[in-house]
Image 1 (tube, rainbow, N blue to C red):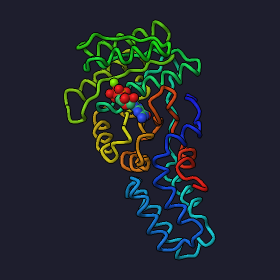
Image 2: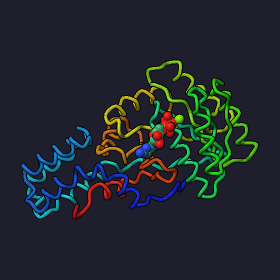
Image 3: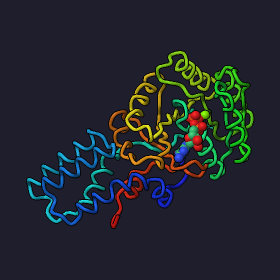
Image 4: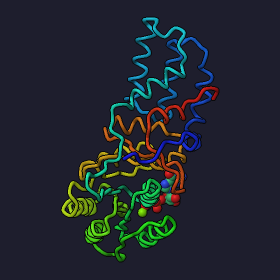
Length: 307
Ligand SMILES: Nc1nc2c(ncn2[C@@H]2O[C@H](COP(=O)(O)OP(=O)(O)O)[C@@H](O)[C@H]2O)c(=O)[nH]1
Ligand SMILES: [Mg+2]
């Protein structure tokens, strides 16, 4: 699915907080000879922006080797860093899977308040913009107001919705929605779920059941299981991702609220630690504040010349 295009302007805006902690130290390093001291500074900077030990070590180790061999003479530190960061993020399938035969079912999961419902609205809007018919399933029957929150989005965006009463079995709502997606010939079914802690066994089993119901009803479904992680939660996102992945087959990460944190470097730690590809990123509260995660654009927006 060629799910929407990366718009560098929005990405720049969304990453301004992270860029602001990187830009002054990087500008300061620029033009200097890349030596041990510069590399030490870079190491500190990467670690302090949550890039994580794995990516940081890999990058600075390589640089230290290259300094020794003289290979970094006349190199620009910003260009070098951009190139190495992009390299760390390559080799992953970041496309949103689309079924050969409609409907494509996308299940959205995560802990409370991370932005699941907002992200469902964002994806729904983007797909509708591409001319696809979308059906939303309001399967968060747990939290009061959750169904009406998604209904408000559905009305605003002109997208159909299947809902359950508060307290209804989310698997039953999922079943109804999958049935409706087939009979109404929707292209994509987007399933919003209740927030759950990865430590809550019964709720994790409920999620497995929703996955199973979708699979029973629609061939090959769910085609995507997107885990929403809140970038402002920093290192906590790592344990969430690992635990969810133990229960359900997470196919991609929707990293929300990148605009709200200076620690955008967490994307590297997430991919290093979980191996799950980040597919989409949220850079604001409006439905249009979503971007496909594209390593080149991301790193370019993070590290700018003249910053
Ligand atoms: N700044 C910012 N806020 C977001 C983003 N995504 C969601 N939110 C906000 O996070 C809060 C919780 O979102 P919600 O979708 O209800 O989370 P849920 O409980 O996981 O469904 C709301 O106030 C959203 O507007 C984002 O990408 N950036
Ligand atoms: Mg919600």
